[in-house]
Length: 106
Image (cartoon, rainbow, N blue to C red):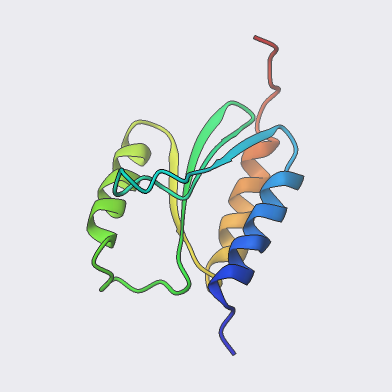
């Protein structure tokens, strides 16, 4: 049985809040299309997460989201589409990034 989208969103939020060396923001900007659902900084590394109930390339909004995630990746950040089927892989990357280097006080 597929995980409900709200259940998945809660799972991601709980994980991000427990991740060491991490700050995260849930985007509520409905006026700007294509902004990732979560903007994250972990150990000084920029990460953007676009949550999906399922990894479906036919989604209408996906092209703009994909464009923005690709731009983030090109400038050295990490941008991901996240769905229940790839969540374990994304979690592993986030765990590794959160321990990648020491944070600093600004």
